[in-house]
Image (spheres, rainbow, N blue to C red):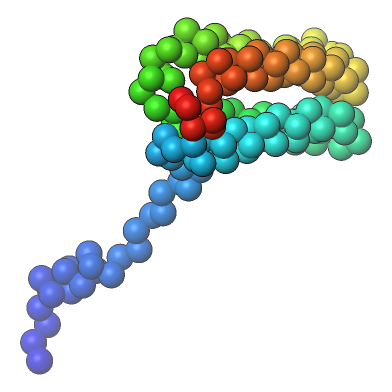
Length: 160
C-alpha cells in the first residue's frame, strides 16, 4: 500500500480532538422552569458569595482568591439568568437590568480597592476584612434590588 498524505491529513482532521465549549452559563430558553432554575441558582450564588465574605479571613492570603472566585460565580449566575428572559421581560426590564449590571461593576471595584490597600502597605487581614464587609453589605443591597425587579418582571412566574 502506498502512503497517501491526503488520506493522513483527512484522518487527522476527522479524528482530531475538538475543544469543548464552556458549559456555564448555558443559554436557556425563556420558559418559567428555566427562569425559576436560573433564579434559584442566582439566589444560591448570592448566599454562597455572602458566606465567602464571612469566612475569607480564615483563609489568610488565599481568602481574596476565594471571594473573587465566588464573585465571578455570582456574575455568571446573573448572566445565565438574563439569558432565560423573554423579549417582553428584556424590553420592560432594560433599565433595571442595566442598573443591576452597573451595580455589579461598582461592587467589583472593591477588589481593586483591596489591591490598592495592599500596595499602600496595609495588612492583608485589615484590607480583606474591610473589603469583605463592603462586599457583604453591597451585595445584600444588590440582591434586594434584584428581587424587587424580578418580582416586577415576573421572572419565573410563568406570567412573564
